[in-house]
Image (cartoon, rainbow, N blue to C red):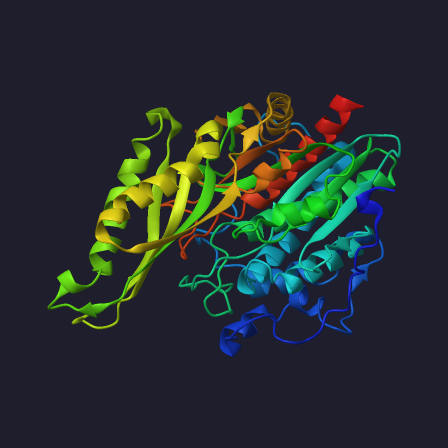
Length: 480
């Protein structure tokens, strides 16, 4: 019995309690649609008997509640079939076209009801319910904040995994859109709502192929929590058996620098390693009139912030791309009091795996050398985050062929290695696979990831579904 066959918690009934935090009742009214109602206790679904792919009033009711006015920058720019692309098997393109309004509405519902890393319980329940409606058998992770679901095809075939992350960031949402976050201080500013909706669409289409006996193996759908924090949610998935029997794994990540219809691909490292560094300084404190009688922690903190990043970068090869940036610093509460405590925290990012292995020792030595002359006591917390995502060459071959089939030859784009971190890298420590960058760029100036005003062209959703369906089918065929 594999770890995945262990009993995981059953999908619970979804309560009507507020999902998280402080709600905005006025803006919540915009989201009283079927996507929201179908996930409330005692809700009734009105499926069309002759067409189980869509509910009878979903296309009008949901899109009328959540779709922006015609001409909006966020209106979908997705054509029915990209030039030079290949049709999906068994008329799945028609089914996808029927699904798109619901997938966009689901994305907007998730965007307006975000949950922070580690607390994605309502999001996981929504995902599980949607997969169940597609005839699949999802299982919640042990904590209940993530979902694993196999689409079972040929029983003697290989197992290929597709992963989406589902958590949001601790940011306010300033966007003037109907689906703006209704949770104070929480926002989907990294596109995880898009990743989730895409993988739901993939599951729905692959379930149709499996029912027809035309899926050459198993496709495991992984809806992962806690991508944005440490410890990483990918490790929870792995511990729960999410990679058992998997031969390859794939994922997409939103890229606002690419337009819809293009996918960024790269063999080898595509992201950087990312660790968390926290330095706490302490001393006796004292009067700002007599710094010579105490330890001036504000001065020590200033040296830490300005000197350590530059000195660390001098201890490693220049092409390793090491970058230490402090994002938070704190010291004191009064203008005339030298504090007894000070701290700074930030991230260390590095492109090179070998340098990443050496980084904790290098940082510790440099911090000690810089702070020693000040007389401050140092407490260094170095938290390992994630190694670089290193794309397997064969997996990129699969993604390249899948992208050309799904979007046409012009859909393939070269992409550079990013300094961003991604915990998809931990999956690749166990099985080969690849991460691709999905174009979500809008007309006009794009907003980078992790900014509260980040948003996408929702034409990326059907584009991503087509790419991931083609990827799953080609991966299964390549290893059978």
